[in-house]
Image (cartoon, rainbow, N blue to C red; front, side):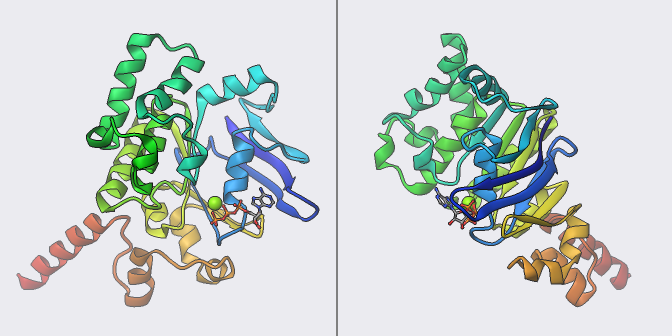
Length: 271
Ligand SMILES: Nc1ncnc2c1ncn2[C@@H]1O[C@H](COP(=O)(O)OP(=O)(O)OP(=O)(O)O)[C@@H](O)[C@H]1O
Ligand SMILES: [Mg+2]
């Protein structure tokens, strides 16, 4: 179980996170949305034990997080994070060593390390630039390496901070695929993103943050129907929800579902 209980966090005097109580174990994919600076990345850093709340707690397996070296190592075997900025997460100059580092740290045998790295790099489509020095990669390529670095851990929880920022359309589609695969294996994903359409499509529950506070929570259908709350949080509705609210079209979860339903409608009208 990964959750927060009345969590308050401040960098300096003014609080950045204000009494957040969130339970990420209740659903497979949780989405965190909110305007720039509302505290999403700060929350991720609290969840991964990099930052420590001044009040309240991060709960891991039902207990307040153990911040000792051993406790954090145990947490990081089960909770893997892809940070917003790939440079924050990549330490080595070559890709294989960088990804292998975390696996060696948790005692994975050498033969398994090679296989796991190979699988993860294939999954994020990074084999073609695998042997280039990391400093020569583009932002999107680095992001793919950072995602591979988290996937190899095969953790129970994967925290993705802006995973599609900087990815091209095929990278974004692969990300959706990866999330669905991870969920099918019984794991959990927490995703923060400004890609509101992505959040709508992949999440089972959505949390809207506004200046460090929880403004609304619920299923994507419930949350995205609340236009006024979304505007207060500096957000807009996903395009599929807009088609529904503005034009009365059926509420669909994905572009593919919308096209399928419209095709059936056209066939029915034509016959
Ligand atoms: N290291 C830091 N020291 C002091 N203040 C910080 C630090 N990092 C972030 N902040 C402040 O904390 C607040 C929340 O920042 P955070 O990065 O968590 O927001 P965010 O929701 O992830 O934003 P974005 O959508 O731009 O990624 C902002 O006001 C930011 O200026
Ligand atoms: Mg952020």
